[in-house]
Amino acid sequence: QVQLVESGGGLVQAGGSLRLSCAASGGTLDSFAVTWFRQAPGKERDFVASIRWSAGSTFYVDAVTGRFAISRDIAKNTVYLQMNSLKPEDTAVYYCAADRTPYRGIYYRPYEYHYWGQGTQVTVSS
Image 1: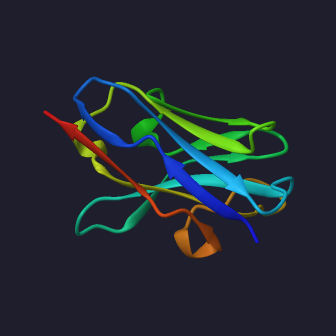
Image 2: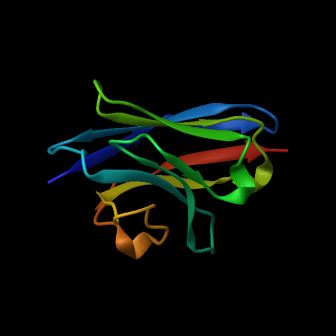
């Protein structure tokens, strides 16, 4: 049973940076992808970025490409989301999720993930 714990959220001004962490425990991530989703008030939970644990290949939604970077530290069993050039529209609760990957690529929909963290709030002021 994989447990995920996020940290690193907070309040930042537009143009600033934050780094989120997702620490995993309780199982191996070798055949998993770890994915960040975000959910703004009154909106659906949306895909942000993902990394296939073994290969390290990364995937991003267009809205964050070039501003966000997802990475992993295998020794620490932790995935990071470095968020730069933050905008007010990035304000949301950010969740990390994990599950086994398909043969190729990753899953993009929240219902395709069984393991979730508790979420961390990111607020970007204008």
